[in-house]
Length: 327
Image 1 (cartoon, rainbow, N blue to C red):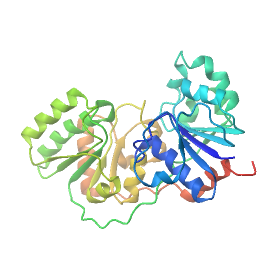
Image 2: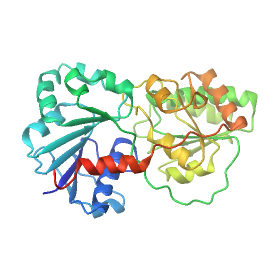
Image 3: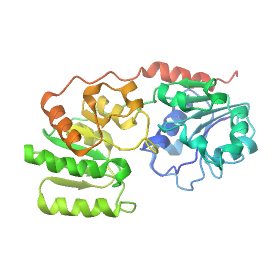
Image 4: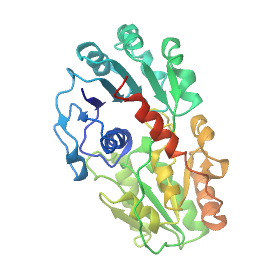
């Protein structure tokens, strides 16, 4: 019988976030001769390499030896646990605020079911672990993110260049970056800012207005890009910035920061509790414009030594052990 990797998010953006973690796990299992399927409520299944792994939709009634969910706690998770047939079930939560989801009045009635049916909950930090309900805390395990193999890219790195790779929304810290960039240019007018995202469809109106004004004031300092290869852009830029102001809806340990380390690129993240567990203080800043501007200048000038990556061999071994055929 197969192992199933399930996510409640669309599979159309396999290069990003939680969906990428689900895809990397499925690919890991497939490469080690495990029979595996991907499943999600989405009808979109794009890009190229993922076609090698079978896909099914809908995913509420899955039959598999093991099911590994990559999602936040929600009613869809509970219904899938109730209606699917399996021997073991795991849940990986990458969202930083693992506690707030359990307070949802629509989810609370399902909590006993989720606690009973899940064999293990995987998070990345002690901060997330402390926020889990008591019935799941004893089933929890801290495991770093699974990383992709970085490509070999020979690109010229542009000094004093800042890269942002996210949707143009305030909760992703883009407003903070735009304000910080104005302060930064007053200190050194040679900096550039590249904003790369999946398009302007879901952009915040306030961010678009702010961006338009900034482009008019500094037309040659801001570069807009659509969907990009993150590794290529990271290799070309001096500093990658992702100072999101709120934890909800964001990674406890952002995957993109590890990808920056892989490409030997300095990065800046917000100074939130779970990130302090994973990254040195030199790469964190209070998510407000002045602090972010000062940190970006410091990172560009001083170029502190990058932290080590999580030990991927151990991560792979643990994930494979969850899906052992003999279990």
